Length: 174
Image 1 (tube, rainbow, N blue to C red):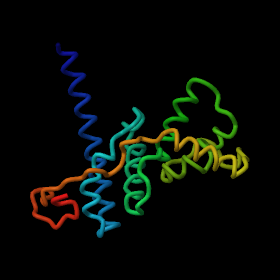
Image 2 (tube, rainbow, N blue to C red; image 1 turned 90 degrees about the vertical axis):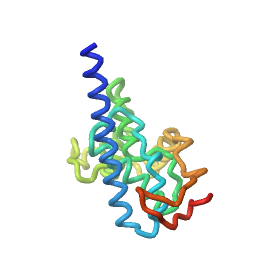
Image 3 (tube, helix red, strand yellow; image 1 turned 180 degrees about the vertical axis):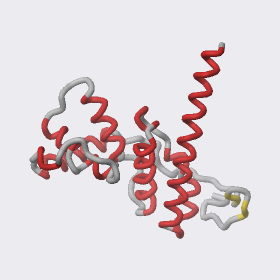
């Protein structure tokens, strides 16, 4: 019974950490895009972690930032994020060697620096020389395959109250 309690406690601590990270990224996005506060407020369900590696702070925060920036630019939030692509490549690389195009995408400047610009790379960028169109096609394919179909703001309803404050939300009464 004690082991079960420790397991549940550990799970809840992880969820709490993730919620704090997502809330912080959302607040920062609101500061960057103040005219989109209503969208940001209701975007929290889109920020769900999709991979166990998102228990790592920098991975999950990157995932959240990309989705929030897509919302700010009215872009599709469903395709895989750069963090999701990196998680997938990591998972695959633990089971089998990656083809050179995939390794280049994962290890090179493409997905790693897009997702984690503040994190050091584990190879020198000059070690992989791949054609840009090959990587572009691979990136588009992988992002499409990692699509989360229900990661979109649809059927949003609002009571006109955000965090206890009455607001003029564009979703109120919708």
